[in-house]
Length: 171
Length: 346
Image (cartoon, rainbow over all chains, first blue to last red; front, side):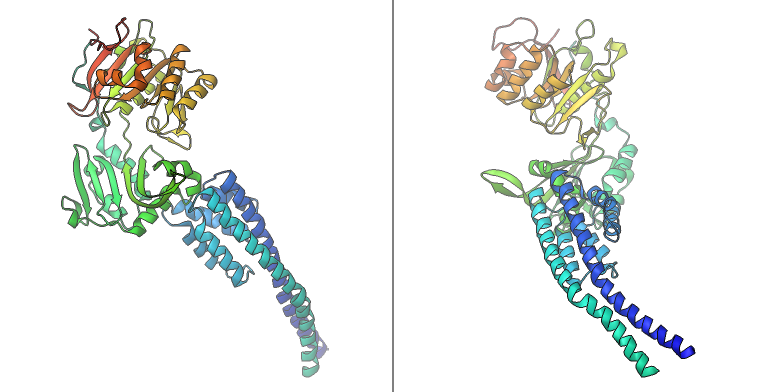
């Protein structure tokens, strides 16, 4: 009875590990989609609304899902509190403080590069930076989708198979 | 009725401690962290006398105090020798610009193009540097090398000596031209006229009146996000940073002012718009650059104003006894031949 329970636990743990890795692919996709929506809204606020960046970030944060909403709200609040600190610096600090948001380093690089330009130039230039970031995120989203299709299912099966092998070896 | 040599009530009368507190609250947070302690460490008496703070990259941070005193910020306080002053770095300049624009240059494109920003409290920051020119017109500043922070100081009562002379029987305000060389207090006078006419002065029989201020250079009301930072009265509408000719037409159509106040008239379209306002029955109070009435009358663009007798009074300002010295108040109303300098109102 005890060995059966142990085998079931090992199998479940391995399957869960595989599912967790597979879910990270899904979560990255979702986060990239949320970012694309948020940046489109930010572009509207900046280019058409001329809304100052602290207010624009907080306004977009209110209409965005987690974890992007918290990120934007934090940067907006920091900009209010530290007006003499460049937005890019606060953006970079906020990004560095979020290791667990399922983005790949290449996704974060696009965001950090965008952050360093935000608010620093005229509306036309801001629109160029935002459109470039959106195009890059769309490209990364396509890549992430392909990776999810290729590796997501693989990790799920791998978890199950590894658990099965462990059970066979141990019991 | 002559007010010859009578100076306006000047900013020197303002409470220096109150000015120092405003500087701490409204200017200090914008300064780069490295330079902030230099201003914070000044005695309140000196902070209260500040007129300008200048930051030029590669040069020591400078201060202009009331009484035309030029100083530099040193590590231990104000110094006369620029070599002992604390230098402003490019990083300081970049941080100041970030703070002034709140990391939102795009939201201040027009202000950026014009080279000045108004801060909450009405303080004004002018800047210059390397201009980015497009089709012969400056588009923006590629690099900003110098900043001039001018401390706003309301001077309530600046028009006390002038306003009674501008009133007709029945409390009507007469159309008036304020003639003044630069930096002689004409904007201060216009601002206080707007305030007093808008609030009303019962002791003079002047009821509160709807006033429109055309503030093309954002100096009279110093609007921040469309809201006047100076007290220009409860019945005052301000058209901020808008070209005069357009703004005058817009205000006449939309806001039905009884008195219209504007600064530095000079171009022919502005003069035409002012005449429209006068002919529409609106009292106009405007300022022009000039050291004397003869100079103003000789300017071709202003000739229609002179020849049509659109204005009933002219207030001549100078710096003879300090900024805001009222040299004369001329009565322009009696019929006269063109080119004759009118006599002071007896």
